[in-house]
Length: 380
Ligand code: ADP
Ligand code: MG
Image (cartoon, rainbow, N blue to C red; front, side, top):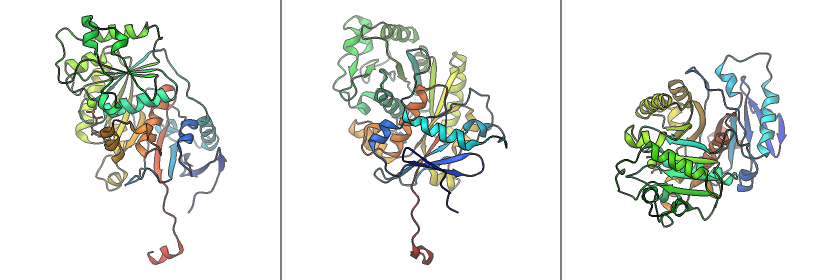
């Protein structure tokens, strides 16, 4: 049965779906103005114990960047954590939350927000997340410094297309060979985004360089003439050795990137424990490289499974998207793509939710279903 039309807000139609207050928000035309004007609003669940929560995410099997897309939201994320309340009407809250899309997110928490992007396992998308979330934050008007703490295998500069702009690194700043502002590579596209690399590529972590050096660096960034940045994003190296410990030391919140596979999840669980031991309580999770076709075929864990295993607040769900690889090779982060891509929109939303710490809402991005014509009855 087709979804009955409930209301229309800012050109978007809302459709009730299911019995648990799950709504679908249809965007007929997907253009960049819409992305600028309508960042998603959400409601973050409180930091919770590792309990069951419910979410299902649908992504297209083969995303096409230019096709019209659905922006769908699973509202009442909190209510899915508990049994649904029969007296509670989900409809009103959903419409209100969609109306709030028409504003910029309010920065929550004290600045600078020092966020480490970590995973445990390598190759799950930490650097991709740092680049895309960082640039999204800059586009939302916040000043951002991204620190590439992956010492031997730095590649954030490549993803951002800033490799020719990095002349000095933190090691040279600490040696007194240059000033801090000389080591900051400013993005041409978004001047409120700056990149700072710890050391030159293929070099080893200098002896004596540890968490204290990074804490000094964060303090130095706070007292710059230019003013304190809103966000300091630290791209953490893989593993849980010295580089990891150094990267997490100055952070007060963490974004844990994981893919829905058992090896990545085990490492993510271990890292969550280590972060909590280090006093980082605010840990949110990004589930990357999600494929709906595999979830449907029960060949991949669903986001619900991942949440059940890790019990972390969900910051974003990023679909597997070939555009990510293309943008990595071009040094042009996905969120700047026009027209926007599925994964780009998902990163954009994750950034939006990061800004407003108090809000969280699971988001689905899915392709518009094919219209069934008359001949479809005959298999056409
Ligand atoms: P890490 O920093 O955790 O080692 P990267 O961000 O360098 O991981 O990503 C590793 C590889 O995975 C890169 O080649 C990147 O293009 C690819 N990748 C990351 N996220 C996605 C995605 N959502 N879809 C497709 N490829 C992805
Ligand atoms: Mg990396």
